[in-house]
Image 1 (cartoon, rainbow, N blue to C red):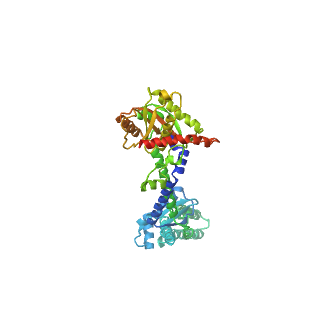
Image 2: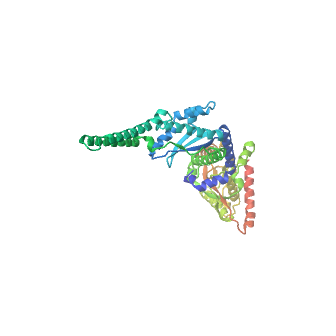
Image 3: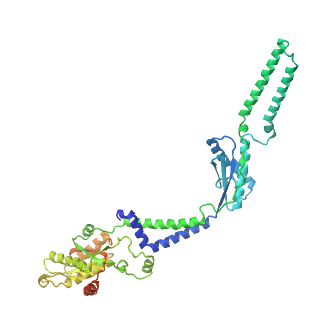
Length: 465
């Protein structure tokens, strides 16, 4: 396959000529997706949000998200849920947490039913808030909670005592009284500054307790991949792989398509190319049995990699091509000879072209026909798997007729060897191509004129059997 294998027009050609096979493969992929959905039960996912008041840096929010899915939190959640066979390790695959905008931690839980998913999310949020409160000092322990407050009350009492001592001292009548009042005021100022620094250093002073923003909402539907997604994905995957397989097979194909390659494989020269009006049966080789019926049902008996036939001229123009081939064949041979027209079995296009050549050579009415006209041709079919050509008798040479893109170099070389074994020299090659006939007003007259020629070709074919 050339670079044309990656063009969109080639993909369109695959879809047009292999649509039955592609449809069946897509349905098979949908069944595989449905079967996969039965192996994996549906899951539901919901989430709950926790607000972190105060100023938080991004790395701190990420740390809180990691804490929410830590083993400590999940183990406590699993113990609170009490689900049979579900521990903290199993919850790790069902619970996720992420930091969102606005200092919000979103905790998501996945379970087999919507109710269990809600319960899981709410329980993990509760355990996370409880554990995070302990980390920032907002604990329910009495000593931890009353420690800073007791210190503040002590500072207030001390400040009052300093005021009482200052009032009881000599109101500035002596130097000692003034110094005592000054020292007491300094002591009170120092206590107030120390208390202010303590409040600023307390992490719980700037950040209030974590706030749960409501319970988890009911899940809207199944968590992906859903059964519908698996079915559609399986159908699409099989369809794409089928198209890729066609392209890969065409690129790796070894069928010869160019004239020099075909001539080199057969070891002879090309005498010319002829046109054969396209017919649907030309693309469908005849076959019987179950395998042939299945191929026809799937459409695999139709070659998809052949390009769309080009439009040719009228029948008279096509007949000129056949006559020119016969003329070149006559000029190439020293004397008038009888030749075999060898056609590979299964090549319907080449068979029809060979029949027309036989008819054209037999209908030679030129003045040179009496002394040395066109060679007499007889068509024979040869199997490419086990090529066998009739031994040399009245015929003393072979003319091979093939179509491009149908045979590999090894198959054509086998045909040439079969001709050599039967003592037949391959005197030339004719390349047949399928074209679309252009309708003309005189088509009826020309079809009538061409009918005897096709009949002669069929008769020659029957004689070869």
